[in-house]
Length: 434
Image 1: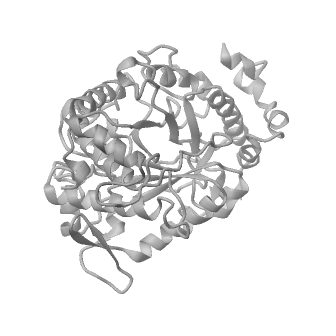
Image 2: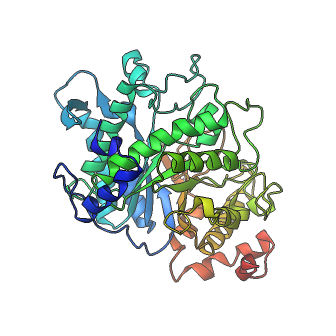
Image 3: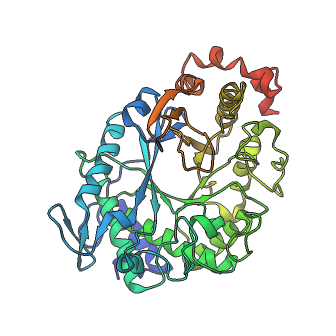
């Protein structure tokens, strides 16, 4: 177990002193660079790096499959990584593919966030280490929870996060820099997106807290101001319909349990990655969402009521060092209907979203999903680009939203977005502050 793995409340001050000095007990240097001050909130889950840079983004989300990151047997391209007294085998080809995304984004001064995911690999030996052992035996889920339940699984998880944290800490500028780590995906709806089998909400929150805490400990060994984020979907005071209460939870309840457990175990810095999709993912008219109320008991938090997300983070019991924890919107988009007005509605919806997000001081980033339509995303067409017919995600042609997205955060924005006002039922964007 690492030095930070066994500290209690009595040792926290010592760790802080060592980190402030730039060193841990073992002599490893901790980068002290402050989290970047970013010009605006525009971001994208990046598929095509050059296109993303042309769009003028300042935030980027990049999916990372931890199953693809490690190997059980060495190969010609294997990277051997020493961590916590053991040698780990890292897939060098996969790492270089990450470098190829992260480095040019870093060079363009884009703040990069890695979304850490446990996709089943179909290799029983790897999956036994990687996936939570309580995950459904029938495999009817997209992503599993991380295996922090067994010593072997936890050791692997810590090693993989440590590898990423060290490589992208700034110590190796030739690989690029990462500032945020999103732990899992939409954990309140774990049935599909972070499966841990049948668990009560407090049990699920306790298991997830292990993963977030372990990641935070390891990341802070390399970068003092990188951030870890909890991932939630738009279900706030309701849960995914038709799913057992032991596999899908209200975010409000899950977050409350998580915060309490974290304090009981010794509070640490964590933040929130929210996904405020519309009530109906197939309807881009998010300004009409009926289940997005302006109060804390709202069923959903969508683009329409983002102020609620900011308000709830001001709860005294959820503060970190006296301040609200930060929010990023790390995955969300608007569907382009297959109708004559579809492209115009999608673009108008983005204008509404951008104006809404810019008015929320508690939100740091709007990371749009998707850059290109994905043919296997349940019929949703969320892209700035259409996918080429007959392909899954090969870019075809740009939609009107592409150019509007490019102009967001620039002097061209006001003139470009004015067309959307009558579509969304407003006379002025200033009405969004009322």
